Length: 206
Image (tube, rainbow, N blue to C red; front, side, top):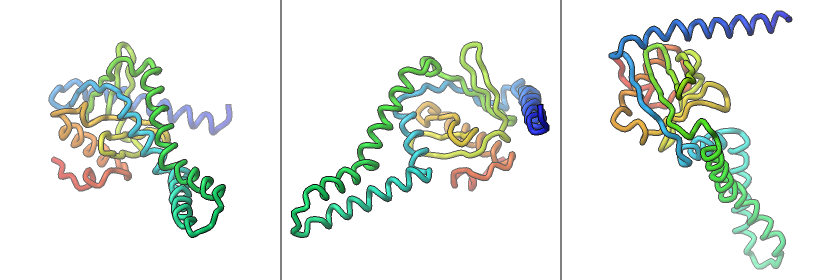
């Protein structure tokens, strides 16, 4: 085992110990917020859509489609190049119509086929972090492990890696929404998480 692997193993062990110690904060019921969260196709689609369209690939693709659409409209200048018009139309529809439909199909497949989404996930938030449990399985994430928090019109996403995270639908939060958002904002700001929705950065905390 080389030095890099040893350092990575030691860091992982420290994070695990930190998470286990942080579980003690759940002893006080007054300091936690707990709620079940179901996964629906719309929630997964919202995650996939914003994740793609905030990446370089997604932004570049949309720009290409818009440019093709503009070129398609301008091609009606009296020329009879039908093949060119068809190609431009197909390119313009690729990222503006076809790709969103493909994302919707992918979201439906993930929600319908993944065993983890058959039952609701139980989320418990505390000053130390977030615990996600289902049956006998559970995972604890400290606020320091959160890389970024993003907001869409329907969900809040807590990224723990560049491509994965927890999807919290506002509809599932119900009356606990403000309480959950304040807990997340307070925990992430205290842990030094830099990428937060603007309203969480401005939120006044106790």
